Image 1 (cartoon, rainbow, N blue to C red):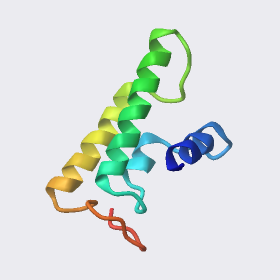
Image 2: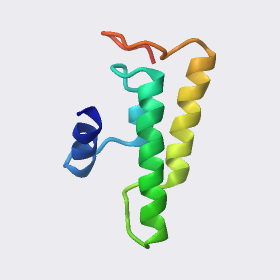
Image 3: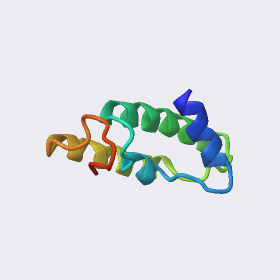
Length: 85
């Protein structure tokens, strides 16, 4: 599963940031938004419990905005081989 793989990478040595997910060329905008919304929920939950998650819900919101702006510009609606974002 892609989500499990990305979460494993985020908790590993080479962490992905929300903005890196938003700019990832192998996911559609819908996939990016689904993943970012899940991460936002996790970050919000961790913050409510007083735990460190690695980034804030605000950082995830910025990445979500980036994806949505790309969609409005016609970018990122399909996966590509060389990157579209």
